[in-house]
Length: 351
Image (tube, rainbow, N blue to C red):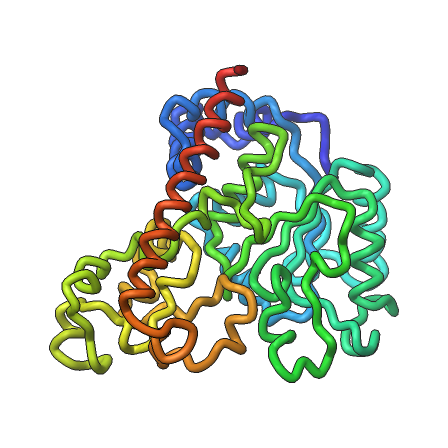
């Protein structure tokens, strides 16, 4: 459970120098597109902060979201658990089990009423409580009871954010998203199948630094990570503009890195930071590895048709319309991101 030590105290106990801590803050600020001047203020705010209690609930999911989080390179799993947050409940990685595990949940809720964060991965089945229970309680009831005293709820992954795969037609379990049940708490959606770990750590770092959640878009996603489409930031975009498209995954165009649009890439209609933040410590992302974007951070992506069918064959009627939409999306996204950064700068400067 949370103690009276600040984060700075705990970092000192672990022998972490201020220089190392500033590097960490710089990497988080960079990922969130914050100006360099924010770094000292972020370091000072985080150093004075006390670890918030975090309750992590897993429902209809494949554990892929948690697996993604354990591979976070900007704040490792160990750093998140032992330094930035107090992870008081998470079935997969917590030591207690059975009655002891449920006692940990009850204690965290009681001792941190109104202050703890709830992280949720997985959809919630509503057709029959038997589709998902823990300790004799349905997933829906667990979510309602746990969210009552929370400061905010973070939906981790597409299943929690939108319903994801469990909600896909014909949705036999009656799966719904977190926001379909929790109506009276701030909700941040961090979609993706799985989500990018640095996005989640960035949201938590923002909360600890500013005492608020980051600015969100109309789908409750952090604008700083979801303002632009994959297409806007893709390194293959110049080939799209030149009309150079791979026709198969192993032809000459594919080997030269040409655009994967005609192979079904959903990058033009998918908002996420994959092309900039990337995965596995910034090594790569699906398009860089030779596979088109499947649109996994968008609502209902499982039901939108074949991953290998070009957008122009379904949602879009021609490439001109698609290009116009991409340009318009970029203009709106950049404007939103700039506004968000200006507001964050004013918070840091106390204006």
